[in-house]
Length: 256
Image 1 (cartoon, one colour):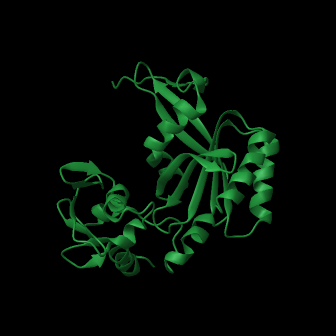
Image 2 (spheres, helix red, strand yellow):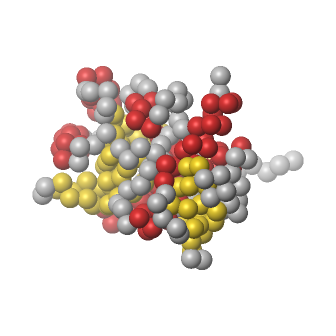
């Protein structure tokens, strides 16, 4: 018989991340893929503790597909009015298209406030309220999980509009393309307008000059830009097509 453990939730987040700015924000920036998978876009970090006048937003980022602006504000406690006000200030100061509020627990009043903002602001901006959880089975390592508490209807579709006309809730990522077989580990990628090459890995990263990194980090290093639309600027060398073109062609052929 298989031995099963007991799933334990770690409710004291500060036992793992004592300080939001010094501990949680750097962890989230390093592990942004966990949040990206939850909200459904490829988040590319631009800055942590990014200046907004006399204040700092925890994380300023972009959507790697479209270049749209994303701000993330963290709170390892229950939601409060102070952080809700900061969200509005930061969204304005950064001209954000998506605002993500990561909290330990969402109070009903603030969940209602985020819902109201999503229903009464322009369709071009969305607010996501998200709780962070920590779990452990027995003596295993801790595992984080993000639970979306509120988000606007069709917000991903609105985020993706400028990228094309694909009617899909979440655009597939490089791992999906690898599983489809339209690209393969070992394929050579080049940055649009540049000659430097990288090799695609099975995990969706690339190797460049002997170093493994994300495609976004590789493109930013080559171009010197703060943000790059990953799938438009990563060119599949053997076909001469961008990853965005390859993805769209496959989806057009295989999506009803």
